[in-house]
Length: 539
Image (tube, rainbow, N blue to C red; front, top):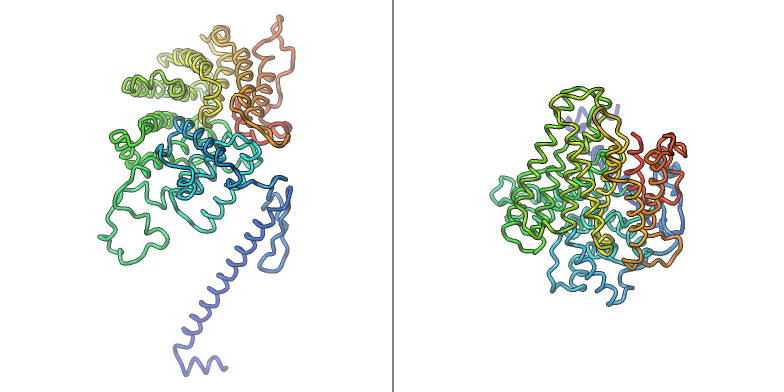
């Protein structure tokens, strides 16, 4: 009755009360958000304890919720992460020198010779920490620095909402050499790809620069992002845009083909085209033309219809003819690109691996597709498969002449190509299709012999690179990779080298190894290469 009387005396009382209730509701939401952030901060603080911990989060209703595997599990190593400042000046200078040598294989940033360690550490602290994680020869410190990078990325990108070139460049380098990170948290690749794309978008690198003063709402401050609305594009921004497209596209293709997970990559757009043209013309860095070439190769490879997107067990003549037509079209574009390359690029072994790897990527859908019950007239499928076979032979011949010290510096993309080469050879060596001579394929490339050579090389890389470890539990990435390759060679050998009666001496893995990855404890942190090989086992 009192409220009714108040409403009768003051017709605006209900509206006033609604506004007050809205304010109270908004205050409650802010309070709940602050409480959740406090809980998140407590979880991050609790992660400093040794070993794996199960965090307990107190909900807004006062209930204790156990953060199990279905919510949050924080794992930290028993060794505290050393800070970069603990390194001697000689060690950090050597790290920068090694990183400069590695840059030619993924030139995402320009570091002039006059840039010093102290300048880089002060102006690009996150990038510097990523450089140390890439270039340090200590496996223990590499692993610990990786954990520091994960925490810094979460704090600066998610909690503090920072959008800086320092963060973008650091993520690009860390992703490109993610094969060095053998810790238990391998799921960061997909998330960091998305974060890199997010940074590009929030910084406005993927849209044309414009004069914001002429915009209708220029009087309103774009909260948090106004400083990124530049009126002109810098070479550093162009380089970062192209590198983001390159690394996210490579990761997307790898995860789609081998792990059967979709990871969005940056889409090709006019700003990337403009950036490539500017980099090619101005050549601010001696490595810019190399980055342009890598991006153009990647664009050709990205237009391939990936095996995971094809209908399973589809034998239609139309689809097979379409695949062969697509392969011939993309191969023509690849040949055109090769004709325009400088002469020194043609003799560069690592670039040759990328060119041949792109060609194999073009062939991959036909190799992956189930063979038709009878030859399809005019499809040229067998001719494409034969060319694919000889391309794998070329790729391996080039790979074997790469110096071991160079192999130890190669980024993730090259090792992903190695997985592509060997798995394509496995399928071609066992392909049962009318008109296809699998014995000829086995004689052209003896896969078991090639695997033995590769394993021997990879086993030498830790000593060739000078890797050290302060703990026996910190296995280096190359030793673990050799174990994966050896497991795969053991699984393939009975099928590729049967006994004289045509039967295998050892039973073929059934179910496929991809269903038993958790059984191989020695593969901790190397799931990316384990899944890339095992997912093709007989499938």
